Image 1 (tube, rainbow, N blue to C red):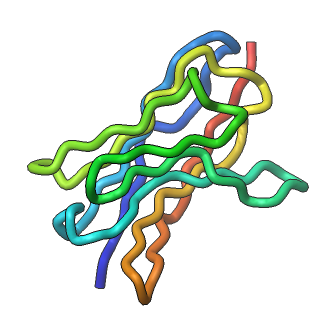
Image 2 (image 1 turned 90 degrees about the vertical axis):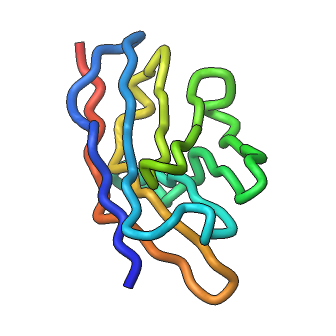
Length: 115
């Protein structure tokens, strides 16, 4: 069974940077798509960024130009580099990995934005 483990969350100041990591128990090129969603209190889960097996990336409108998703195959890890963080970025961030028949989720990691 695939396991995804997020790390790197925590407290960041507005305008600051943070890097999230998602380590997979399986070869990340096994998945069609990997990426990040987030959910803030009282809001629906929304797509933050994704990267497909071919390396094509996709970003949510609110993070485009500020966040970057990238991967390290040998480390079986994807990353979310968060720059110029805004208070609205505060949420629980979830890593996911998708194959045609299944989506696997990480446990989620908290990002808090506060001065």
